[in-house]
Length: 77
Image 1: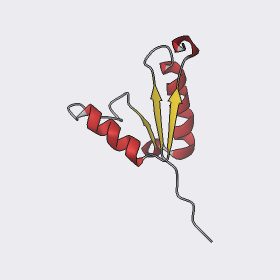
Image 2 (image 1 turned 60 degrees about the vertical axis):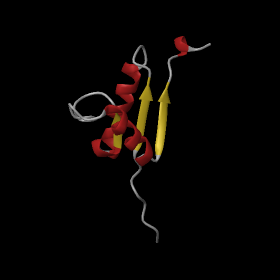
Image 3 (image 1 turned 30 degrees about the vertical axis):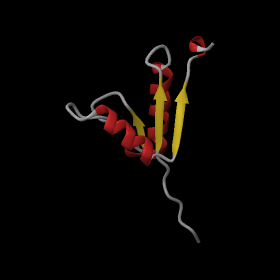
Image 4 (image 1 turned 90 degrees about the vertical axis):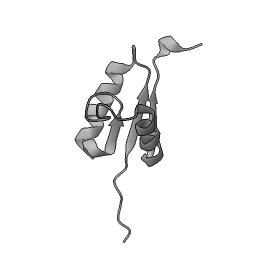
């Protein structure tokens, strides 16, 4: 029988007004997958102070199995 590998998720969002929804999604996913499997680029847990933000985000995107884009309808065309 094949073993199932835990998935990793990257959550991308516009800062406002979607940040509350993205953070709620982050909390829900970390309860299921654990915090090591969910990346949200806010807070000291995601990118330590002094680390290259662009490099950290690029690495997290490359590592993820699923990328979720949270877009607020007010940012539409």
